[in-house]
Image (cartoon, rainbow, N blue to C red; front, side, top):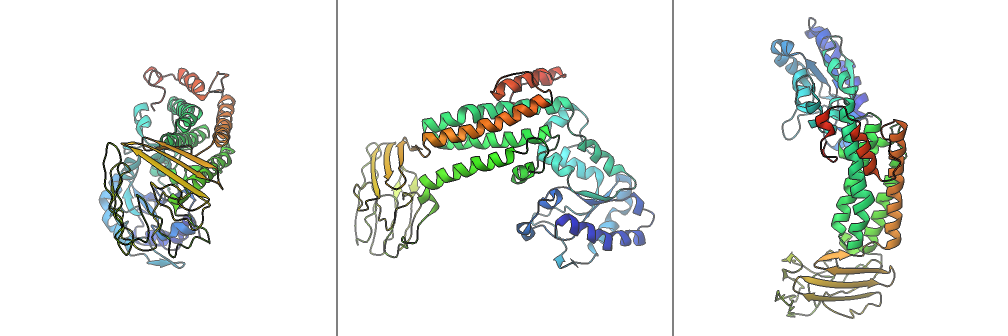
Length: 450
């Protein structure tokens, strides 16, 4: 059962009649429902969501005046409601003490998410609120609000940002998508800056998700659910599948080139007697002392005893004290597709026809040439940065997906008359959007600021 349905049924079964009985003078003044943080408030909860902060419960929102009179007694009343309902245990306060449910002031609820007791009023106040806070403040469902005090603020927030704020945010998203996705992503990969490329892709994806929500005049939820929610939107929802394809393609590239980092072993690689170790190992030799001389670093590694308990102090690779017992496989040392591979770093001709590893260390400038005959993956490592984890064809494929995503955003911007640019580079559209902002102070802000 979905959390919203569970909360509604619990309220109708116990909450509503209890309020009418114990607080007859205030029952019509109390707003009841569920809203705030949590996948259940978004309607995205599933079986995995039920392992934390899940169960029957609801919120009771009071005006400040009413809270001063009945707040404590209403909380006691809520706490006395049945602890189990429809096979689910009633929610308890979170481990860090926050209580999302029970009785609370309307002003406290909105102050928590917007910084203001009645929600934002000025452009500056609107501009400073994170999108997912506004999503949380307007999530869920209101079961009763005859007084209307809670819903009045909620409906004003649901009407969405003032147009100048929406345009400024869209301009910033277009600029980030252009810089991170259309420009820097492929350049980082070409340079071998794989961490930077991953960060660029992450920024592109986040900015893309936000742009889709802004085009739909919906607040983007917490990042965990931002992409999931795109499929339910009317405008640019096709981007949902393109982002899936982009991330799946990157996952394949990672699996191909970084399989060892994921401890990937096939059925033939049980490693009953084989140890794959990092940092200079001669597996199986008792009292084997290996010395590695890295020019400029002069690090000595003493490795292996009779039980293959290995330590390593290797400043050039950043590994300290890797203790290995029998039959342990550490990370970052195998090419995908190799079976029964007994690998040692700094050794040539390891004895596996599918795995040819050579390492040359000169100070901090390390060059690794790793070739896997099955996967045709080549890695070059200069200054401890790995390059070539994705080949030119894969770069071209990812770049094409990014351009397809940007084209959908541009079309949606045109449909809403938000841009007059004819460019296929989103930064140009961001500049066009920002030029149409009425408020001079916001219009003159940096294109990437919000």
